[in-house]
Amino acid sequence: MSPYAHITGWGMAVPERVLTNAELSLMVETSDEWIFSRTGIRERHIADPEQTTASLAVEASLEALRIARLKPADLDLIIVATSSPEHIFPATACLVQDRIGATKAGAFDLLAACSGFIYGLNMATQAISSGSVHTALVIGAETLSRLVDWKDRNTCILFGDGAGAFVLQAAEERAGVLSAVMRSDGSGSDLLTLPGGGSRFPTTIDTVTQGLHYVQMNGREVFRFATRVMSQSTQEAVAKAGLRLEDIQLVIPHQANQRIIETALKNLEIPPERCFINLDRYGNTSTASIPIATCEAFTAGRLKPGDNIVMVGFGAGLTWGAAVVEWSGPFPGVRKLRPARLRLYARIRSFILRLLRRIDAWMWGRNNP
Image 1 (cartoon, rainbow, N blue to C red):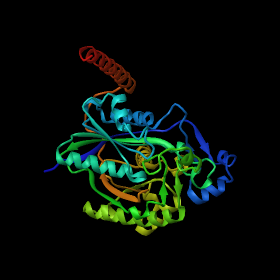
Image 2: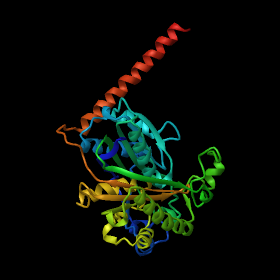
Image 3: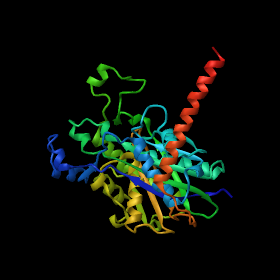
Image 4: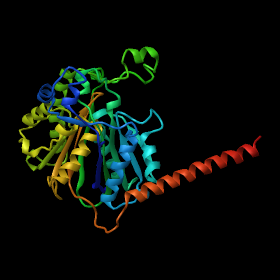
């Protein structure tokens, strides 16, 4: 029988800097009432100049490993889902692999916009189910504040920065990720896009002047799309897991817009008390929103072993997806990990590897004049 992928560790990281709606009203023509009534957002966290997508991902990852009682060297795979990668390449996941010292892990980035964490969760689950991977780390991390036009009130009010991470481990017991659905519709690719910076519109003075390196969105069309697919994918994932909506204790949606979430719940006939929402305090953190909300749901006592939960999201692409998870928690163990020591070890290891690479290059140059 194929093993199941249990979620045994979870962690989150958000910048200390909080940007309120009141502060935004000093930057663009808006108000707290206007933003909250249309989005449900009160404030969002904004990365400091020294913080990046990778640094936030590292913090969330080390916390997830601490809860799972695993060392970075126990990891076989690292997936970073992000819409704001550190670079086009190398992958942000490779930077995380190096900074935490995951010496045996393969690493890659996954780009499916705000649906990315669901996609990454499913990819890691399939790798575990196939037997090729035993332990995986799935991360959603963003610094979207660097990709929005702070003069455009339709987009700058929405997004925040942060990271969330899950550790997945193989086990024979039926629990963990029970099903997942991934869908896409590229005919709607123009509804939510960041045109500049790729091969279609490489960076030039003209693309920068035209603002092609900022997020662009057709809010009305995204709203219609999102309310429809969140309901559909939730129903499909629940049925695929052999469950009914009545069997679901908690829904953890992508935290994009309060009205989208409320409409989707109404379509599913799920009462609001069976949904976890923290949108008001973080805004839309894209791929990080579902793992951050899961961490807070656990801290709030909303998750316990045996609970069936649905994680559902949507994003640019257009993409959408849902996953059904039976919550289990960490495997038994007494190992205590200290993230600060792990971070120091990883830095020393990385320095030694870089030094050896330079020595090797020097030796090669001497032997091959």
